[in-house]
Amino acid sequence: MDLFLLRQSIHSSAEMTFSRSGGPGGQNVNKVNTKVQLRLALGDLAGLSEIEVTRIREVLANRITTADELIIDSSEERSQRTNLERAYSRMEALIASAARLPKHRRPTKPSRASREKRLQTKHIHSQKKAGRKIRPTED
Image (cartoon, rainbow, N blue to C red):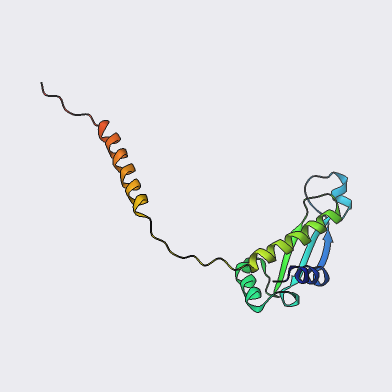
């Protein structure tokens, strides 16, 4: 994965739209288009292999539209520029983390010492509970 090429392709091919944002902000919310929506067609991405693009489609399936576009919204800040920068950085991070292949897990067995420690802990716990038991007294 070439992060520099990926970043360039995101910035060049993403379509942005602006709209009025909800939430706090007073009159600013009612008159300024600060909410940013980025749309990125996955076919336009450069710097990724076919395997990575397939993995992105699997991992981000619930965020991808039927037109094969990834959509990110940002409306946290009162500034349009700040929301745009946040949307770009979130898009880059989302794509980079989704494209990363998980490490192969090698199954292991617990060691003998860990098994014995577990059994010892269980024995101590059962002794503690047995000590709480009320025994009938002989009169």
